[in-house]
Image (cartoon, rainbow, N blue to C red; front, side, top):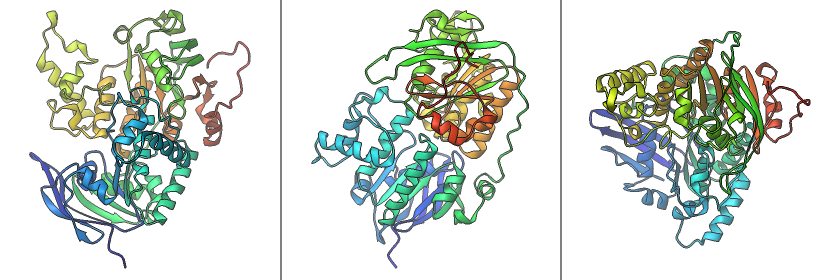
Length: 507
């Protein structure tokens, strides 16, 4: 029998009083697809960074193909054949896709060769990428594609994937799984982190479960149910989402024939988009990343105030030329898909990040009421079970899922009249995802108009009352969610939907 590809024993990592990994053991065989499962803050990301050399453990041993090794940096990890796709991306915004990939590869490769390799891998995996596009114009989903392709170009012996399917259509997920199985058949080992328990059951050969930094279970996921995996991970099954029939209220957000030219040569132009969202309903927008979601949300939130005033209306008021601050004062709040840099300032504390959208903590003459601000922040941390060291914790110190819970909680705590949400549960564990979805439904039941943009079809089917699909900057007609199917929405994602009759409403 060959030696295990990777063998960790007694791995321990502390950050002050917080023990991120506590005596962790992990064994991955050659050609094995091994899931690491755990709720947000369980220590998964820290353990992956230890394997990749980005974090040095305080204790423990590391064997690679049976030989003891010490990995002191990502460079040494890559030399062994370890590649990783981080949950928080490590890309330079001012460089192109090809230049970012080139930085992580052998210096003997030329930039044109790297660009050709990107196109080849992107086509093989069903991931659309343009090597010449600068990273700063990419959506979060497109940035994740860059990370995945960069890792695959290194021809790794161990590939670490963190939430790799969050940007893919169901059809593309199947193609990726087929490719990962083919890659594993060549002997490449895969460490697979996902909160989609059905994916783990279908794809993975083995599973190690972490809870509060410790290994609490190992299993063959194919022999488990989604419910049993959930119990292993969070100690219980997530509560069922309870939805009542919507009580439709007044027209809150109205978009009429919104057309915007591309803001740069890599952006997606918007073409005659019309939609309505009323109080007491959740409207969803499905679509593959990079089809105009980013541009549409910028136009609705006020980040892009180029629209004609009447093209975007909030409770009958023309707001197409208003900035984000003015729209927020009228009751429109926004949860962007990019957590670090747009949803939060990475180097500021959670309390100071509260000031981005919660200005009522400011006293007269600009003085900040620190006591009220701390109480507000603690309220969000407690209600949404955000794992952190408290209101003083800097945003970048939180795991992706916990940061997402904080951002969603901050905006819901403001009691918005209209809420725009992009990718509400991206990278969030099943328990936290259930809570966020339940809170959004409760907000809708309280009379708020909610617009959700997500690439998770199951999420949209579970939460929304009506659905649109966006493709190449165009928006499909509205479809009652109970009439939607995966096959129908997948077809519409290609832009193949029936055109509404002349004069038909966006609803």
